[in-house]
Length: 154
Image (cartoon, rainbow, N blue to C red):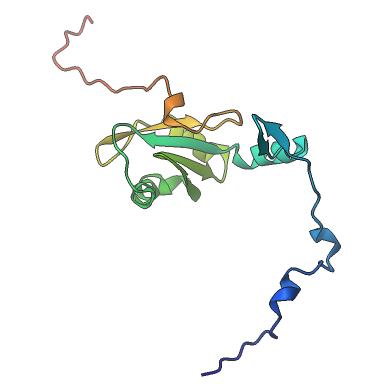
């Protein structure tokens, strides 16, 4: 069975031909060699623009449990939907990056915790451009302690 498309068919080789659009040119940047391994080193303005894009983000991870990202995202969408839309990204190894539309939404999440997912504490940190996105980098975790029958004078 032959199907037709509203677009005209384009040969594969044309996809890799030089573009006629002047805004689509690519610039080559010499890689930086670190311990014999080539590393990309973008120009400073690219790093600045990237940092601006993520400035309203938080880094989150579950303490004591690893859950699939889709499950975590679903719970957070229900809990944080009142502050507006956010995008959810799985960084890896139980670390998540949550990008908010503005700093006010991000700050609301940071200030209205503690947060949990299915009874497991969700640690949240404000993202910064030099932050290592790994669980091992977290040295302090706030805890919530409920004390009962403590005399008023204390």
